[in-house]
Image (cartoon, rainbow, N blue to C red; front, side):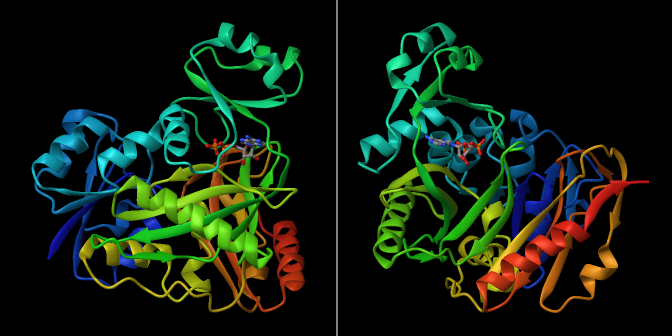
Length: 374
Ligand code: ADP
């Protein structure tokens, strides 16, 4: 059996392991917390720091393949492991580009992939010289995550909120919609594209709040979106699974925002909503099996279960029974013992033909199911 390692044992690793149960594979997970969501679902749990060279190298050296659930892994160890013939999904060369927003934006520009205009900034002082670029968004080159490395700037005064570290100053896009497209690509270069997903964000936490798939958009915008996302993935020249996040502006122009080289939040609905889920698909890619069918079974909505503001401590799921009694509703609890405000604790997938009904039920579930502490 092939030995495959996952760097990171959070909810993405957990769902990946749930899908692994269908395949002949021996799974390994590295994470620094033995109580992490993925720990008890893998064959072998290794406690360690995914950012540490020695630990990642030692974890990977006996394995056939490795994948990641987060970008902040030790990239140098992956380069070395690749030299020693461990297959890495995504390849370190692709990870390197994506890990740093400066390199990522330059990559889009070099490959004529539409993306918001940008300037590279080395420090806060440099930002002040570019007030002509406003309104803009300042993004930290590396280390930002879940909206924490992003500052929106409308006025020259807002520029003080910029990061005093290398980053990009990006022109503000007049966003009509935020879309994500997940694409798997195998060793032969064959690609499988999932239908785009409409994302809606919680403005204050900047976390994905609920989403609907497939996204509604004019056919021409859909073609453009798919073509652009596919170009991103092809130019990264790496097998694996990728989530390309895009903006559609008020004129139906499409811009790439950013890409994740791994299974992604925006693909959770695919577990029940599509014939082959993003997790199933990644195993197919890593184990060399044919790609799966990305078609939707039914339209789907996702509600993220975030820790309720004002509650920290042992997690308690208020309203769970009610939601579990609903038809075509699938609850995923990630098994994190402790909740805190805004923490991603689980998600709920809702299937149904009628989009309005999906949105209505998504709101009802958001009202009914709360993660609190006792
Ligand atoms: P993160 O990597 O932390 O998720 P993103 O780059 O996706 O950060 O930015 C977070 C959010 O900020 C986006 O989902 C979008 O709503 C907003 N945003 C980012 N870039 C722009 C832009 N150029 N124009 C307008 N809004 C933007």
